[in-house]
Image (cartoon, rainbow, N blue to C red):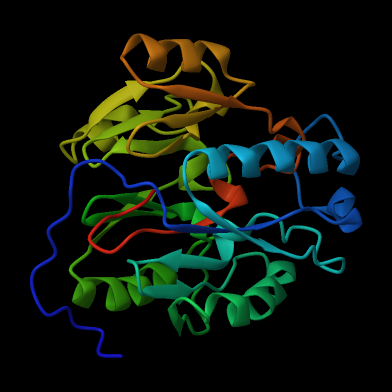
Length: 277
């Protein structure tokens, strides 16, 4: 496929409901996932129940959910967002995760994605996790973090720019990923944990910034008519409702134990002409 668009990219301000989302339930190996959470290993049985609730929320929003079987030898494989960056309805970039133990996840998931997307891979010595890539309309904010290096950002830019997408580098000084600290409500509005990322960095990008009162409220999943919020962030959910958002509260506590959040648990393909967070 020619990577150059036939016309300039014009995107709507609101993120579309994804046409399709890939998910992967945690396997027994999830207990050994990479984590910094102080409360210890996750409970796999509870995580499976929470994952079902997450899938139901996607389906209730009208998303076609593709369930990928658990990968028993890959403890972190349920966090499918990290293995690819979907640029638009037809193209995705396969990442090269910053944690070497996670790189097998890319090769494992790629054949399943190839049925619906053209895939372009990053090359060594790039590292990039999908959790560091925040879509805002025709912009991609990309965190330079402990998992994503400058070479990864530049290779992604090489794929994204011809598709009409601007790549903006953001330094992540605290936390695992950019999207641990900040996610989008629409193309011009973000929520942010001010203790993890200075809101002024985002304001300089002409974004409307809503600081959240709970760190776990910084990772939300917004569709055109609703926003999914962790049940562990009740004040964030209440604040968004007060601003007129239709809020869906989702229990993902066992995934928080694995340093994950709502966006991590799915890889989302937008409809043609739209964009998805």
